[in-house]
Every structure is written in C-alpha cells, then in structure tokens.
Image 1 (cartoon, rainbow, N blue to C red):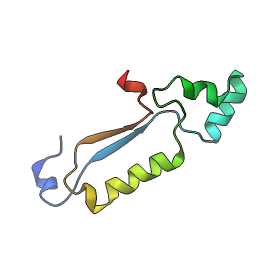
Image 2 (image 1 turned 90 degrees about the vertical axis):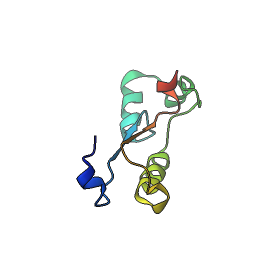
Image 3 (image 1 turned 135 degrees about the vertical axis):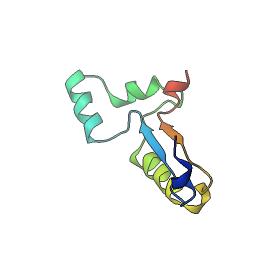
Length: 84
C-alpha cells in the first residue's frame, strides 16, 4: 500500500506483469523445446503470444496523463492466461 504522504506528492505505484511475449527469449525457448510459438499462443484465450508493443503501450498508458488516477494496480499482459 502506498503511504498517503507519497500519494499526496503525486507518486503513483503500478506494476506490469507480462506473460509470454514474442521476443528473442521466446525464440530460444521454442528452439530448445521443439514446440512452436504459434502452438503456445493457441493455449491462451486470445490465441497468440503477446508482442513487445503490447507491453510498451501499457507502459505508455501508465506514464500518461490518462492514468493520473491509477495507482496500486497490477497490469497483467498475458492474453487472458491468468483469467482462466
């Protein structure tokens, strides 16, 4: 919980929790396991891996004035995996 003395100074605390994102790390894991990223993506409710742009757009939102009343929030970017 954010102490009131920080919130009153405009400090907001939010966090980003990405799931499987289509990056070089996912490429490596795909090579090591022999399964394709497309196969993994089909396991998620949205049907595909996330993109780096999905994460970047969330960062931009949190940093923008549009989220000025948002604090103490965990942004989960996982294509609905944890919602199952």
